[in-house]
Length: 206
Image 1 (tube, rainbow, N blue to C red):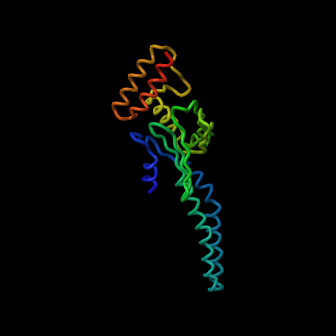
Image 2: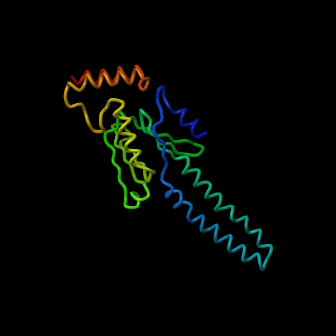
Image 3: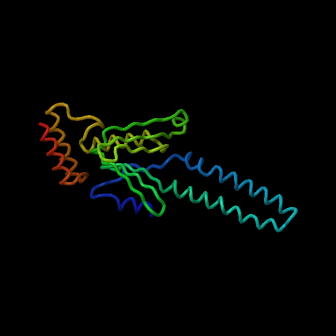
């Protein structure tokens, strides 16, 4: 169902390059207290049942932290970070969905930070600076942040925008960029409208 929802967000000729979530550390830290509570309840009720058999009814109380664990898992599993060949999408929400996306064309810079533990267990923060009204989009403690950043850089370059934060430095580069965009158009990666728009922008810089 989640895959179908993601597919419904994609435009024509848009394809998914990478899907990731927050690291499992985030989920574990959210459910740790609930796990401890379940263990204490089970041990306490089991001990009481030896003396008072009716105390076994107290196992119903275990449902409370179990429901909390299920809620935390659903929130974690439904928060996804997606890189497509056109944009970066952030989806959250179990029933009510909240979708925030950043066009790769408007991404000016990407910052990644990893703590010592983050480098060991492969998680970190990725901050996307854009020219849109959103301005800054921060993805905290996502899994495999290096792969996520690399996927963004590669997708932006395939679109013909070059490296993030870079611009064509000489006029001779523009015809080659147009030719590259034309190749992407023929492959169906970008639409005719996207090709014409970017071509006009590049020609205006000559």
